[in-house]
Length: 353
Image (tube, rainbow, N blue to C red; front, side):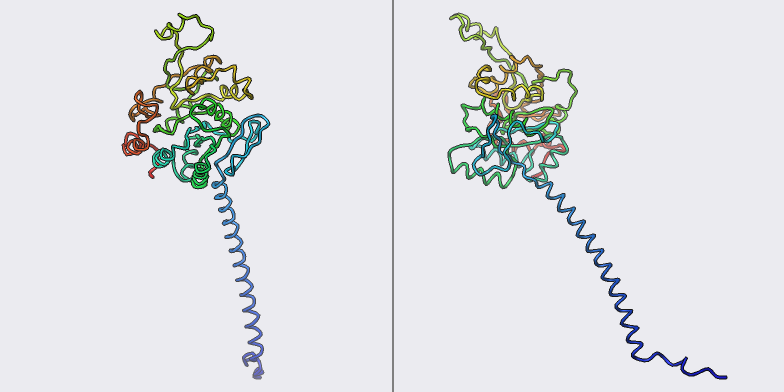
């Protein structure tokens, strides 16, 4: 008996359209789900990427008031305002404060074209590879034009530590003390390095020097020279002759670069007011002042002449024109010339600006 013909007829047009619509809707729903997943994954990855970038673009320049109880704003350049009692300090192996002034914009430009990167990412890489943090250190001035130029430079490079102290050559010892206090407030460091803006520095080698194991916790590290001892202000008329003849001298580091261990800086931070500072005499020269204080504190003097080389050598850490100049003679030009020499710039930390 033949089968009923109805089993061989194709579905009606209406049924086929209904079936097609259901299939299309199902496929469309699946595509929407996949698209949503992909979009969500992309958005998550992008958010994480932006978060990492935002961390690397954190503001680095900072103004610091170091006197106890002060909370001053450094003009309108301030990005943070920190007092010595700050607890959340950045942990680094060494902090290098490059002392500079309002007349040294050219030196800073030359430095940023040589061993110190001019961009935030480059400076971050240098700090990560060496364990050292670097900032230009400068005070303030009442000259509005100079302050305006400084604001522009801070905004462009973001590599400053701004001290709430008048920037004057005659007050360098006070600025140096302010620097060590501010550096200690911001950074939990093994060593704090004072460097001038007119030397050619090898950060990788400086890092190795600071990382060495030392038996003495209170260390004063630098290229040492001899200077006259000034002890008793009531000297007899004939006694200064002994200083002129060189019979009584003390060692202290040349000013262009030296380092103090954390234990030494802690003692300096303890000098919280001018009355205590008077106990440690201020001399006109900043390096003599610090040297005299180190003598009074009975710290360990570590003499290293790799910090005062006149030429780039396989061991030199800081290069400057000793003894002709306290730093490089004509530093803006000499820094660039030195960086062109393979013996100076052939380093994993040297920049290629």
